[in-house]
Amino acid sequence: MTDAGVLVIDKPAGVTSFDVVALVRRRLGIDRVGHAGTLDPQATGVLPILLGEATKLMPYLADQDKEYVATLRLGVTTDTGDLSGRVVATAPVPAPSRERVKEACRPFIGRIKQVPPMFSAVHHGGRRLYELARQGLEVEREAREVVVHAIDVEHVESDTVGLRVVCGKGTYVRTLATDIGAALGCGAALARLVRARVGPFVLADALPWSALADAPPAAVTAGIQPPEAALAGWAAVRLDGGTTSRFTHGQPVTVVPAGAAPGTRVRVHGADGRLLGVGEVIAGPRTRPVRVLHADRPRTDVRPG
Image 1 (cartoon, one colour):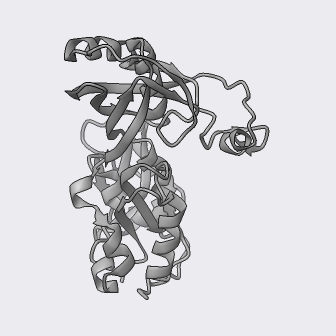
Image 2 (cartoon, rainbow, N blue to C red):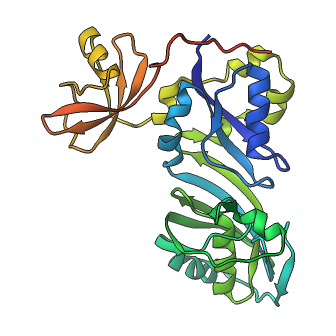
């Protein structure tokens, strides 16, 4: 049994991302478990769980694009940006057209500035913003640049709008909902949020929560994908015995993918196909180690329980 891999979970509403990590630890009997990108408790959908040595790939997976399906309730604004919060304003909802909604979304596509919501995990003065918000405090937050690649309008009804959002790391869809509602002139709050994709991992392939909680252990371990699944789409190189030793000991190797420019991040595999880690192409051309996996042998098996 491998000690490293990716288990993609379909997180249900009412469960925190930490709850998922804790249950995976219990079911698999492994301590090194982490997730790539927190989902709000009321949000559902794709939550990639990294196991063992694959936890070293967390920043590379978290940096990849995400896709969300969001339902906005028009005519209401809350302190959290979703319907779980306290209503701070209501307004009449003019009959919105698809074109009017598209127009309201357009300024929020591209590189934009977002102010993180108070109910978020951003740190302020050594504390999470949501901890301050629960005490009734509000502090000034600095706007952050995020990237929204696309906002597609999926449906428009009397007081709800359905959007499909493709965005980069750090984007708050709750904030998008609030800003789009303001642009429509009636306010809006997030009624439902489903994360449909994180990088290469899609909802259709995710393990249901019921299977994680109740299925036989073999059904859970069967869903574990190899670590390199987190880097699908990356250029890759395969090393022989000598270059493998140099790479895993922190030395650049004279093996690069065809046509790869300096600065390109690549997957590096050993002669047996095992992922050795992440490399970066440098002048030479050579590939220097950036993150090495399986450097801390002996390895510990995953023990389903």
